[in-house]
Amino acid sequence: MGRIDLHTHSTASDGSMKPAELVRHAKRCGLAAVALTDHDTVDGIEEALEEGNRIGIEVIPGLEISADFDPEMHLLGYFFHENYRRIRPVLDELKQRRNERNPKIVKKLQQMGFDITLEEAVRESGGSVVGRPHIAQVLVKKGYVASVSEAFERYLSHGRPAYFKKSRMTPEEGVRAIAEAGGIPVLAHPIYLYLDPEVLEGLVSRLKNVGLMGVEAFYVDNTPVQNREMEALAVRHGLVATGGSDFHGKFKPDIEIGIGRGNLEIPERALQELKQAAELSK
Ligand code: AMP
Ligand code: ZN
Ligand code: FE
Ligand code: FE
Image (cartoon, rainbow, N blue to C red; front, side, top):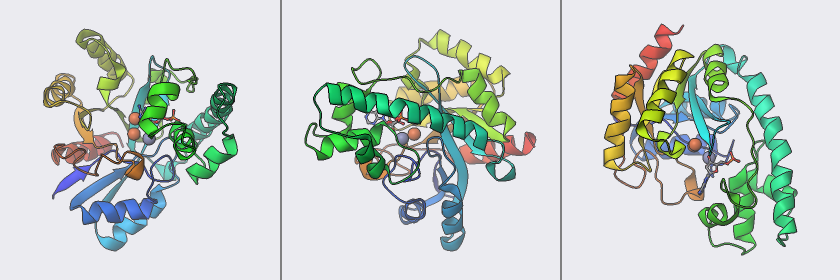
């Protein structure tokens, strides 16, 4: 095998590369396997799988959904049964929440004096999942901020003036929804829960009780110490320690697929263990 990456985004959500392009990019960067984990959609997966078959790189179907949590919780899901038939109603619901939230964000920004529209964000997205990164991109294009991350830091992040809640699924409901659709549920980037170690420990054990099978231990924004701590957390709970770069193409220009900011190392065994988990859950 070789390098792997279990967390990436395409134009199907808020990445800048088309699914096939992302798969070619992964191959060019020397990856042996890549998971496509778009927010709230499986729309990019078929194209990615086809391209993977064509050029000879393993593509793992996946997605990333948000659960209701302060400030935010993301759950990754891998594999799935029956052409995602059973996860689709969940994704439709999430998309509806998004479509209720996005106009609130834009309206607030308009009230703050920015000349932007929802249509511009939709155009920026090029797909059906419209999110904050697209709104941020409009603010960048119009010169209101210098970068997407500045837009988040000033306006769009939790606690900032144009933040509005989206998900109404509890963490437990999110894990169950993925598991019941034949997916392998993994807690994404635990550092962004900003929890004390003992609280995180309790949360992981609660989520394991409803079907959690992995923790994203090796993450682009982790320090080396955090990588080891999150891996140990996974091991303590008998969960798979997965890893990913959270690649978004040019929307996160400092992050490269497979290696993050250059020092990310995602162990190959994470994929083998995910597959074993998928086998066992059949
Ligand atoms: P949404 O799903 O529309 O709420 O947008 C969430 C996405 O925005 C995340 O998954 C990231 O891709 C992106 N994001 C969140 N916080 C930041 C940040 N501080 N800087 C850049 N991108 C961010
Ligand atoms: Zn994203
Ligand atoms: Fe995330
Ligand atoms: Fe992500």
